[in-house]
Length: 134
Image (spheres, rainbow, N blue to C red):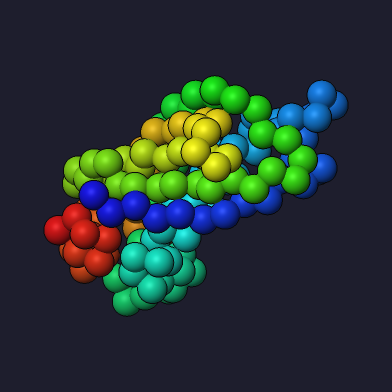
């Protein structure tokens, strides 16, 4: 199964008073992973998809995150992203944040596809083909 990676450096601003990454920041890291996976797989950015003749946008519908180990200032994390499931207007992503070979956090994120009015719509077939999920 195809997976994509993006590297994230941890900065002081990412941490809480105890010196570890604040838990909510993983949402940003995982979002970057999904965004870069889309861009790498299709060559398209979110803005391009939304401005296309057949526009599409995405919204998070469900998130499950497990935290296993802390990340700290100056750590270099790899965010791995893969499409786990596609069904109608939804894609489910499986994601991991790693420091080297150590898993720090995992996520399962359900993303809904919608039109510009916010109504659900099927994922574009061409996009699914480009992501290896036709």
